[in-house]
Image (cartoon, rainbow, N blue to C red):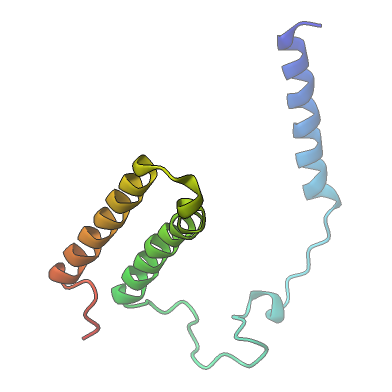
Length: 115
């Protein structure tokens, strides 16, 4: 079989399954399904789609960035002594310096102020 025929068969099967999922699925439209969920309690506000302050997003992104950098720091710190390589130490120090410069830059820009 040619590649085009295989792609055509796959497209047909996927389309058939996609359409069948809409036909076979059972939908129920009740209040509980469309209401806001707040850990099992009744919603405090009538509108659950309240806007968040931008500081929450900034803190979340900064946490994500610094948390991902820890994924690289810990394994390298554990094997750095056994590597006996000056190049490994230099790469590790360059990474720490870039991390520190980024942190100082964010601090100077005021991204860590909460008020």
